[in-house]
Length: 394
Ligand code: BEZ
Image 1 (tube, protein in one colour):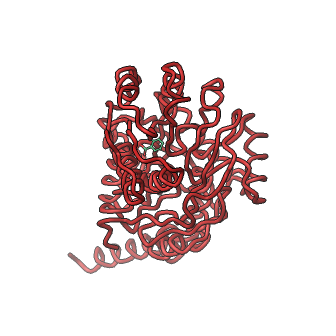
Image 2 (tube, helix red, strand yellow):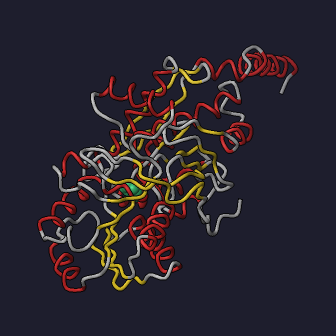
Image 3 (cartoon, rainbow, N blue to C red):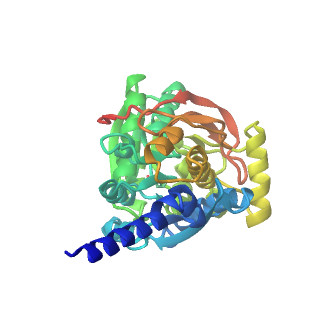
């Protein structure tokens, strides 16, 4: 290369370098761009209403901050995941690889979320889970970039198992959709129920999202256990409770569940859910100012009461905000941002919570008893319950 060409090249490199680095510091360049948030949630199917509640409340929080978090606009990219694990990897890749989102938020269904976690891990993309309870997300698959603002399937189920035994029941039959969430819920219930001297005498399951419950109800009526524990949510929960009542079982075999059975579903049950006792990390009538303000704002904006899914979506936005604040909106400071998220206290409508080392909420699990369209709190089934995080090495 002759000397002139070499000089021209050096000059060009200096100009490019200045434009990219020295003249415009990275933080300032980033601040001009929005934070790209990939919302991967169900908009159709049995969990559609759950996805909408998460989306609504995440956006409500951002709007309450004036549409910006730590000075940066938020731009949304949405995918309807249909609660279909078979499409999950492709859907997550669309957001992470094609749209190049800065943060992936989702989803409701455990099986879909497990696939999302693998995609997010591969690209080291920040991933916030606002519902899916798969134990492995904050167990074997725990990772520095993966945070959850909801629960592990074990948490409410374990608390319900303890409470069911505490009510004097000795035998139980379980029934669930046969996928990670249901299997893990049954495992958590059984662990606590049997630790306390009870016995699960039969475990029944049907593929997700089947709602043909009649054969199982016939079997439960024949077994006559002291209690039944189920995991169902969304549209399937409505159908199950109506069928349980229609089969004449509600008065003879008490029905218990993780609170997803009755959260956001009581109105559609039309009275069938009255009196059902469930355990969950949220309840109606909690005595805290944050909950009151959140409920009023959600009702005013969306014309309906929020549920647990809305709370989890709101808290996902709060957690992202904590991280962005700590780095002045500069998401290239990954380690600093994640450390701030890990150490955050979230002022949640459910009551303030912190995250475990595995990035799962350490939280109170409430007992609730359904009344009208509400799940008023009746006690605490397990205080400051931490997930065992089996297999998490972080
Ligand atoms: C789950 O798949 O993890 C799940 C779905 C609905 C409600 C709760 C958990």
